[in-house]
Amino acid sequence: MVEQRLLHIDGQDVAASDGATFLVRNPATGEALYEVAHGTAEDVDRAVAAARAAFDDGRWRHIAPRERARTLNRAAALLAERIEEFARMETLQIGRPLREMRAQLKRLPEWLEYFGAVAQTTEGSSPDFGAGHLNVVRRVPLGVAGLITPWNHPLLITMKKLSVAVAAGNSVVIKPSELGPIVPMELVLLLEEAGLPAGVVNIVPGLGRTTGKALSEHPGLAKLDITGGTETGKVIAANAGRSLIPVTAELGGKAPVLIFDDADTDQAVAGALFAAFVATGQTCVQGARILVQRDSYERVVTALVERTRQLKLGDPLDSQTQVGPLVSEAQRDKAADAVERARKQGATVLTGGAVPTGAGLSQGWFYEPTVVAGVTPEMDLWYEEVFGPVIVVAPFDDEADAVAQANDSPFGLAASIWTQNVGRAVRVSRGLDIGIVWVNDHHRIDPSSPWGGFKESGIGSENGLDAFHAYTRPQSLIINSSDAEFDWFATVEDLRYS
Image (cartoon, rainbow, N blue to C red; front, side, top):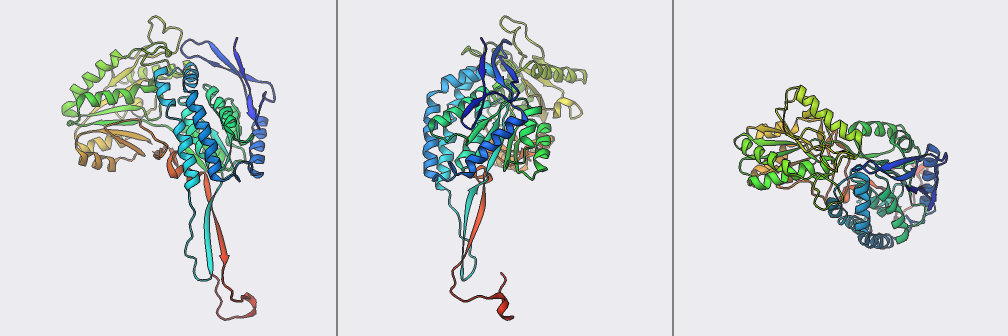
């Protein structure tokens, strides 16, 4: 029997106002897993009102930061105990191999611990206001934040946003992806179990075109934080802009992986393989363009193609599986269509490029890990974010050519550089119009390290002190400490306005 899940508003599980629901399916088999309440605009109103009431009465924001941190640390400990359970639930919903989900989720308690520490150690300032006055500046929470989170890393990306929002003292309404809402819903319950007051965090699942639209347009928000595709991000930012609501947006990418002649070939190929096919290529920092210096191009690409052919597709719950299904039939078809267009435009598929037909694969939304050569800037695949196990390989001549090709994209989220030359790594990184650059690594993250892109890859950043500041605003208290008499209208001499 399919399990039922409800909205969670003001500490209570409630049905959608119109009783509507949607199904969450297992992408490896197509079977229905959950029937989830579909939030309406009225439900979003209820959630924002509950969050606003929690903010206004101070049940969370007026608690001392040290006490807030203790609650978050308790939640971190509870989460650490439930990693195996949550990892399995994530795998069933989105199809990412269980071995990957375990590794990812083990890190997540760190976000609660880190931002709890930031909250209790953040200090204000006292600018020099001049004689006779004392100026004290402190950072205060914004109010109600709306979080719109994606399906590819349901718990990780929810955690990146939620941990900092509540650590700073805000209240929150979450709209998780309809493809993977269950574990973010479990996280809200876990936080309340740890001591977070009811109403501080509310979650309203539903479709983007209805529930997401209602949240993005809601005038009761003080901030909107989204991870998603660039076109969706533009629409949501425009919606928020009509109410002058500030937006943080982590959007699309087409990350280049730059492999120089002096790189260790085995390590560079292993790194490129990881960058390309972890999470079945469904990450915003996927190494989608593997750019290799010309003298080593044939050697590197041959090795990369061979390693790609060896990847094991299959049941994501099997510990031997290395690549799982795509999250939906639509996503699988998008990847297949992108490869077919590239073929018709003259590109060459070196491996993959088909829907597999082997045992255990026909019922799910699988697609072969695919390497495509001969893609030029005139072709869609050079620029298009596929969000699947499809990558482009291309040669470059020197550092300048590598930088030019890497920057030839509307996106600027992430890149990696593979070289043994430290000076080259620094020079090339300085030339990249890209927000996150790894050297001899890829897709590494930490709660203390800013995560955000340039160009059409987004606005602002997650993680680190920048994110905490973005969930607070400065309040300036100016105290007249002088005992001198002051009467502006009693004299026309020696006036001081500022």
